[in-house]
Image 1: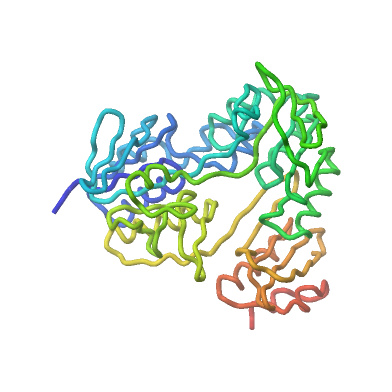
Image 2: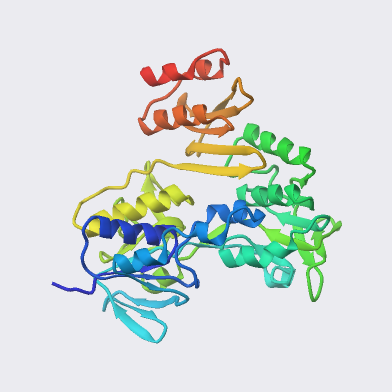
Length: 404
């Protein structure tokens, strides 16, 4: 029996979760966790919120103390990206070494998009929000009175706008689509957050194309497609991410908006698995990629169980969240393909938007309404629905839905 063990390429949430779960399940062979950053595995969601605000010290970002990895004999190789995979020989390149594996888990994550370099996307003074290094580099820019332009009206862009507004910067957010959150939320949810940001002084320009970043030695602003120039002291790109699939593609693995996996997390090679933002997985007759902490953990733990000899199928239960100002957004389910929505106001000022497809509940957005989120999530996870009329009646008790 081979004793090469498991190599995990990617020391983020998914990679760490896989390593920890393997040891918790009694896996005794070597585990090597390889990351291209100098830090041990850490949380990413707080980066664009509490860490950027300075409310969360670096030490609290780390998922485990470094002593944990030594105690459980998980070899950490940091600041050493994997340079290649030979599926035929079951080896990877790492630095100047060639390392053999019994199982390889790809947890390589995703890379943030920028404007092309010829359009100023690489100028000093332009930033993305993805890693601890990104936040450490951008944090000194957040001084009161400075001008920030954010490209992208998704959750990352809105979270950065909220931090900047709280720190008294002058913020302009530009969204190319007809409205913010176009790809991920209903108009009702978008309207809630549009009003929230505008009430906090953020200028939002929707249906507006960004032509280029202006400046030569450093970004000085942005030029819009119509020719208007907006001055800025720095620019943040929040225009989505691209899954890191180059290693997989060069190794001959199937790739389709991520590394293709089956319901157990296995790639097209029986000894290579993939988890987290880099992986695409089967879901309700199609193939999706879920960018969330919950998915990274759950998918990684399913892979660990299968490697440990416990046949396990991954049944995704999607959930997400975002913090902006004093609003906590909690999202249950996936709203893709919805054909109607119901908006419900809570007595304490919260609000929720419930998504239906052919009168079946498929997702819900809850803004400062944890009860609505909890009930919607339990219903969706159980494969149950909820009457749109009952949900839309502010006098109804949602708890009765759980008894049906």
